Length: 172
Ligand SMILES: Nc1ncnc2c1ncn2[C@@H]1O[C@H](COP(=O)(O)OP(=O)(O)O)[C@@H](O)[C@H]1O
Ligand SMILES: [Mg+2]
Image 1 (cartoon, rainbow, N blue to C red):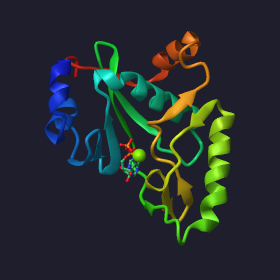
Image 2: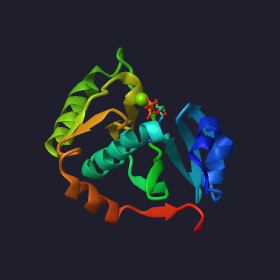
Image 3: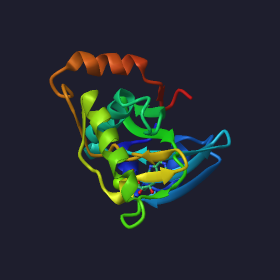
């Protein structure tokens, strides 16, 4: 069992402690790591107790926006039923370029519109949150979203809990 105090020293070693089966871990920023599992590149995002709600919102936003060019939720790591980390698919590509990617702007607006249509307000549209590859534009970062019914609709929350792939620490 990993106590919350440990979260203060978050880094590659803690990521490997949470999931020892990871083959590669590289820190991208304070809460985001690039990892590899079963030969596949993925992103590992950490949520401290302060960011627990944010992480839950990201997970739910990604589930609701499924089918769009956004990462797939691969695993949600929990401690005593609390979500503390998320592993999602890595989207290869490069950052959106304001000078040369003007033709992709309409894709960005259309994608945000489709995400809104499933009840998720995407509130963080900016170049470093837009990945461009041969399949077009992708939105990898659901850290800053607002979800219709997130606080009020408890049922949605509970149903989500039943569906998510949860691993309880200490019972590996
Ligand atoms: N699913 C992903 N696939 C590929 N790269 C990603 C993915 N998620 C994040 N990244 C990379 O990591 C950086 C930081 O991740 P991001 O989710 O934007 O974190 P933050 O919420 O701190 O802005 C991004 O700018 C992007 O380069
Ligand atoms: Mg970002």
